[in-house]
Image 1 (tube, rainbow, N blue to C red):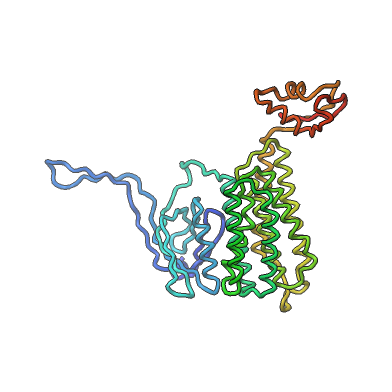
Image 2 (cartoon, rainbow, N blue to C red; image 1 turned 90 degrees about the vertical axis):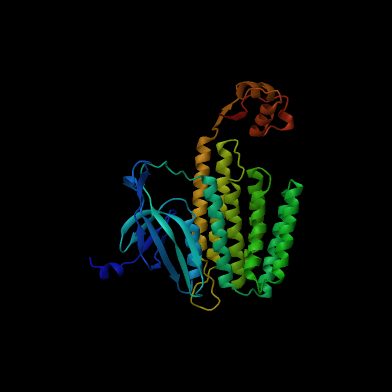
Length: 407
């Protein structure tokens, strides 16, 4: 292939997270370093250079994203480039390469283009220790990326929120805050939550001029309960309660702006559930993990059904509402991965066993039989919780009663 044919071939970068980019490029060059040891001897002139195998080739990178959306594309590329896994680079001159970026410099000197320069080094695929993705890190990272997508979608569609839109946002955060503060256990969380609420209201006053700051502040207060100091079950329960409160008025949503508010706030709420499921998590058994997975899936399915109801029949008409595809896709991927992770947790957790009691007994004897006794009587409390033992069964549990425990 001649160099003329080669230069007409598109440059492709497949980053470690699997995303593909096709930027324009300039100034291709590379350095081929070698593993060399230099020896100098007192009685001899010169240097003895012992050369072994070549090192990874270093390539100078100069790429460009242009067009109306170049800033958004560059932002997504930056997030992809932060993934530590190697890139696959298909270069018109150098072919397919497995590389790692050493450094990248982003420049926006020209308003209509983002210039990215830096150095990439060719890496080997074998011989290195395998890279394991931590599910918690991935879910938190994907959640943060989703928040960016939803906020950009909001401000792109509503660059200057009108009073009706601002009022809807204000009502939503008031409902969320009043419900959310009921579950705050610590003074520190209460102060943080109150400050986030005040900050969101402050930004809403200037939302027409600064919509991005306003929607970020609102998303922060929506996400807050997922990070409360509490167990996973209670955090998810609170987020689900907030979800149900917001969707209770879905039938009254008619305008494009209010539909966009609903799409944004509810998507952030569902993704907050996904995040809450893995933040400082501790599942006593597999059923708890599966119950959380069911709540997240049901909430996601309900949101999709609601958005389908709100969607306009004809997307070409002025004021028609079509849910943002990128936001929904990112949310779908996050929910799918989170639920899969919860299934893994469930399989690795204690499994439920049940039987019908052969003869009359009591909580102490059964706790000792099934769970063993501890000095603090924790297993007795655990047995009571598992079997929903009421006051009338504390002293005696009748024959043929269904008894459950976990192994």
